Amino acid sequence: MTLPALPGQSPEALSLWLHEQGEPSFRAKQILEWVWKKKVVSFDAMTNLPAALREKLAASFRLSALTHSQTQGSADTTRKFLFKLHDGRYVESVLIPANPALYGEKSDRRTLCVSSQVGCAYGCKFCASGLAGFARNLDPAEIAGQVLAAEQIAGERVDSLVFMGMGEPLANFKNLMAAIALITGPETLHLGARHLTISTSGLVPQIRELADHPQQIRLAISFHGATDEVRDRIMPVNKKYPVAELMAALDDWNAGKKQKLTLEYILIQGVNDSLEQAGILARHARGIRAKVNLIPYNTVEGLEWKRPAISHCRAFQEVLKDAGVMATLRIEKGHDIDAACGQLRLKRETAEGLIQEA
Ligand code: SF4
Image (tube, rainbow, N blue to C red; front, top):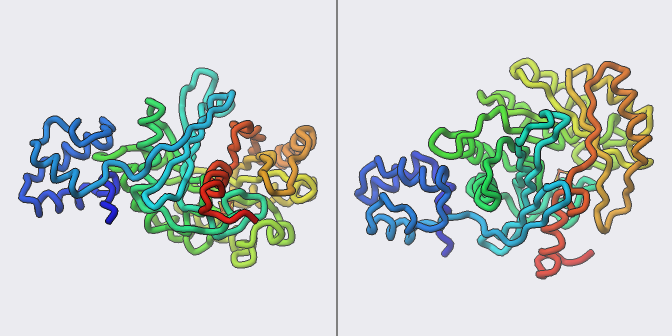
């Protein structure tokens, strides 16, 4: 039987466990501090706990939800981590260095791109994560544990998170919100909610549910097509929640939230990169007061899509700017390390026979 992971225990759950063991409740704070602040890698390192309690902890919990399997580094210091889970599956997280265009030359801010599922059921046509279908949801410890593990490996504090890795985060809503409670909690990781961005392909009911959540979590939409015709072609989710329905939900989102929405738009040659699409995209973005992140397509092994010329990407951006929309053109960091989400995991799971080659 696999033991539960200690980082998945909320302060309340840990207090309850201690109570059942006949231990004083103040031990919960000490244990959480060892796990989340001091990031120890063994129970024996928890030196202010009695040996008998350390033994009970070791008999009841795993100290980590994931095992570091591989790191890929790129020239721009983006690092991708591959983690093995208790059932032999893999997920990946990407640590992205500061973007001087956003934060200034001297900034040393670091963002971690976090996965929420093994694989993905949404099957966007351009995405490596969707290529082999859906395996399972990550549990709260496996989601929040990626941050802990990345900080342990890198020896650096992560300043912000984007739930933009493998999986559709809003399709794993309950576990995602439990992970966010661990990530933002004062006794656990204590990262401000406004430094968290959830990226969704456009699950309208969950967007509405998230809008009612009191924390000021940011929202980004993987938009990638300004009309139903284009979006239907590359994102099957659009058949269920078409553009007009999505825009209405985002309009309502704005009523209760302070931060600007973001529309992510991967530019794919000959698919969604016409200047006509740019004009329609500009109208949508203006309507919901969103900024637009343009990302020239990152080639995925096994897929036919291509990246447009950078000069064409700039022309697309100009249409947005001329319409008064804030639009950044992000030359993907980590282009040399399979940075598009899911590629490293796809290679490893295929090599280990967990996924059949198409
Ligand atoms: S882009 Fe996101 S929602 Fe679409 S298949 Fe990839 S991981 Fe899933």
